[in-house]
Length: 528
Ligand code: NG1
Ligand code: ZN
Image (cartoon, rainbow, N blue to C red; front, side):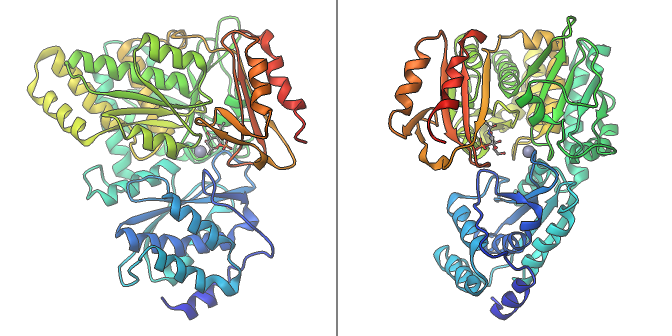
């Protein structure tokens, strides 16, 4: 390690005095002007992680659904996963180190993690369309090069595309080619094959309106659409040509306000979807004939996908274990439908995709989605091989089902939740099953629910257990919730501190809108 060079370059990316940041659920996120030093230091850290794992590490510059003025950065581990927890701590430590402590912190991390400093390092970098992202990704590159790491800058990418690149590079090309062309070709080949198998391929299934949140999703869909246009034509809205990123549009806006984005005209029963700012989340929606808005969130996406996969397995005659992973935010109706009607086991983890992803890896087929539309499906290597064999060896209907499953496996981005990939999976399933958006929506009826943010003096006074569904502290809070909840049918409520914002999140659901007081208690809870 050339400590002299690190000190010299670090001074060019100086940390603002007194600024303390934490590597949270989605990496570092704050106002873009406070992030230059963090970017440089994450470049350094990515090199150390790469040397330790002897693998390519990813660095993504994005703040997802946050306002355009924000930015953020997260590291991507060798199999496309989120950074390991012990390294999240190193990231926080390094980002907050004073200039004079930088050398010591870097040496500490290297010693604690037994990093062989002679080992080569390779880092891949991607960024979203925020005005600040290009300069900030240059600071990441400065960090990488000062520690002697090699790098490839992919430039503009969706977050899941960067996860895909990392995964491809570390699996010797088995998963796919680590180029944007490779990504487009793998997904669209699988999609076009699937839609060829669909007997219902009328106009109903051929077109989709997509709200791109004025973000990177628009750019990438434009590049990709001619690859899959045989099977689907997409009409893009909020494509970045006029509006501001995530402003009154995008998946987060649509989900949290439960209304359509601005800038999109919706005719009744038209199928529409929204991506978030870095295209790793997707939600669907439509207006019924009476003009009522219907949201189809991550829970219903997980239900459609897991039901379809289960049907294919039955058709093929394979009994593989399939599980669905949700968080406490999943609507109670979805959990009941999956368990009682579909007979699929459902598991609940803490909020944040890394928790869901890890749980999903325990199954032959693990489907995970957060209610906000972030999710994917994972298939064990043994399953992939088995299905490939079945597609070659079986006959007739069984063979057809195995072939479908083989293509569906290829269509999922198994490295991370991916709006483009999920959109194509959903479109393929709807066409194959001949389902309209209304029929999909009618699988079950969501319990009325509300999610609120509450600003309190110190959100850390709330701690939780049981996958965040119960409050442990402050004393008396859980008892107060229990007392209220038991007055209403099918009711459930919980409160947890956010991992990405300085707020407490409150969630409540019950069998009818009249049960609203369950929500209001939290607003008056004396934490202010
Ligand atoms: P927090 O702020 O910890 O609730 C939010 C989302 C998560 C996840 C992360 C990362 C909700 C309720 N929470 O986490 O699902 O997406 O941001 O972006 O949607
Ligand atoms: Zn996102």
